[in-house]
Image (cartoon, rainbow, N blue to C red; front, side, top):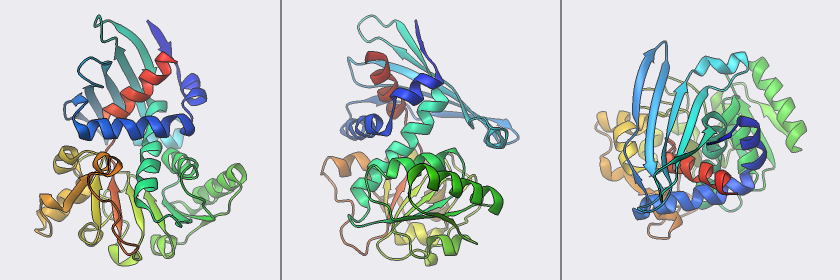
Length: 312
């Protein structure tokens, strides 16, 4: 059995490689080509989670599962918050053939999925990015979005101004564009064309009244029912697009909170991103639309990325 470790994933699964893989995976998902169950999540206490995500890339295609733990405090210790394995099975014989480092695949494919959504939903001239958070996904999102938009400046907010400042210095040197620290969330998003929320917030940090018309948002930080990053007003005002409709209706915290308040119904999820990519449902309809891509993460993204590494 082949083992693909973290360093190999990081070296070979570049955003140039991963973004097209994720794009096609989400089209296939919304077409019904893939097979998958809603992921199972086991709370472990102290904010720790264990997730089991099984799926198949098609009826006669590779299949497997991601087994992943989530330990948010790992970031402060220099470790990935997501740890685990992607296990691949060969479709012809059913043999397990490969184990891939799940933490690195998750880091890359999550940002790649936001880049896919941003390419489809953000205004073509969007150039000002706001990132809420300064962790691993904040860096990955900055790198990935540069593949789909020409960014002139990035504004960053985080709970620790010192860490946010260190993040900005590091990313500005790496990417060659100005990163600056915002004093608060309202300032961070005040002139943003694109907003990425990649925090571990339990309660809303972003209010809809702070978001200008025409903005695109990737809402990424909360991947289970419960913790929310944005308020009900923003959900209500937005053209709300999911990676998985079923996933959002069951586990999309921001959507579920607005629904529980009686402000929206299930039809507020206007499309899956795969339906937009395939041209079946319009994404952005006007320059004034506020578009939200709610990212929960999906196993077909992991399996497609892992299988591409295994076969190449």
